[in-house]
Image (cartoon, rainbow, N blue to C red; front, top):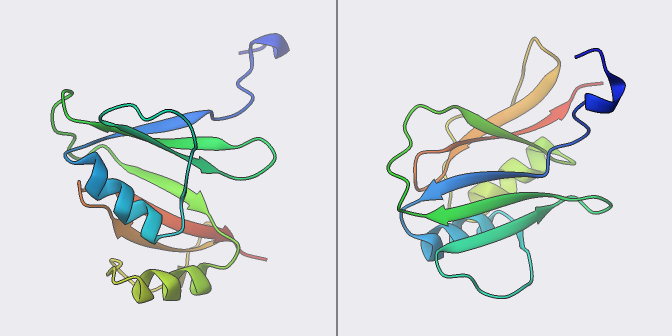
Length: 125
């Protein structure tokens, strides 16, 4: 788009469909995600990402069918290797150890309980 007023400014939220929201909340909390405070909504949870102007990772239980082969969500972390070690200490098994990518990131992948691929990364350099 050429109209500057019509540009996308930021990402507000990503919503993932899950089978069991309570199970998924425990999984994401074990990785250090901070659950967003607020009134409880059955079958729904939200996690705040970042501080100043956060984006949100939302979990929505059932009713929307299975999601397969949709892609991945990429989260930037302060230190990929430290986050990897914390992930292992929490009992999770990432798909591979952190590695440097030719596109300029250090990253690793972890699959959540519903098959969503999560990438934890940091720009190199």
